[in-house]
Length: 391
Ligand SMILES: *Cc1c(COP(=O)(O)O)cnc(C)c1O
Image 1 (cartoon, protein in one colour):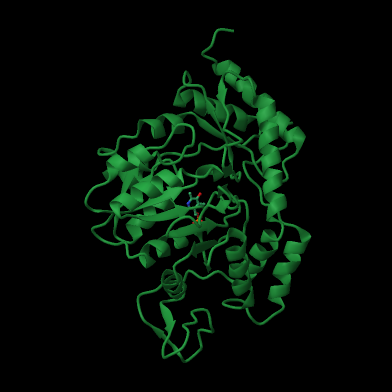
Image 2: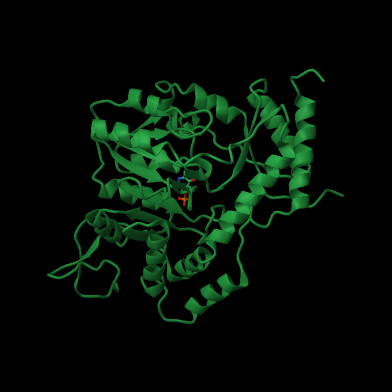
């Protein structure tokens, strides 16, 4: 009999959250209603941002943030390759050119030195991704941006709750994006949120997500009112990137217990570290970084440099045979078929070396101690089989 499967990720939805969703279904407002306004206000308050705009996904948020900041054809935007493909795709959606920079081997975030050498006369912006919930080196990145007059977008999709010097990531630059896919710290099924301190950018994002509707005539523009309102006109090419009331109700209920969620995820991380510490085959992620609060999206371990990508893949397959799903996070974007045109001109040794040897372990709020022990035992057995070290 094969053992019970341990998934890579699993949602954590309480009865109260199910109730919150059902109660929206008993009302007559399923989109652009009070739950969206409440969710936006609660997110803005939680991260400490002046404006928050709910959107249908993190990708939609990236797209609209770049558009609202005026990035377009002819512009270059510096991005990491060791991340989710949506980061570079959003740059292409607005007609700009992604330029890949390398990461630091320990932080897995953009390496400021690599960013500096990627800057050309066309560079307009950089996207700092807070990878796996570890804050990017914002002070150094913002300093480079200031010197070269670049816009900075923070992709905080993996980092809700992470902080630098007491300030939430996502609020440290021109715009920040959060995402609520089921594997994230907070989920709405699908969803995202853009935060910004710039009221014009906020207003434009709110209009662009709703078919480019602005309220015409004098008075405060209200981009969230009923579509049937005769005061609306479509001022520019917009999109349908709205988040439904049902999703916003779920997000609000999840946000109400975000501290407990983040604490649970940190406890899982520490347990994994205790179980795997002192294994010479593995490099574990840092759990304590001075001046930062980490928020755990996934728990990724790196095989020692003696291991190859093929060794890593065999370890992943061995675990899969034992019912344990792990992730090959991340396959570098510049090596994806959709980025064949970038491959020749992109040289990212740290990204390629880290990506070849990283394994993301099962990581979800309700994982049990016994499941974590099973994962670690199976991982260590598989590593011994592949071991490059003398016994
Ligand atoms: C999850 C994620 C996104 C957004 O993903 P969606 O599926 O569009 O919500 C964007 N960037 C990063 C780095 C992510 O991890």
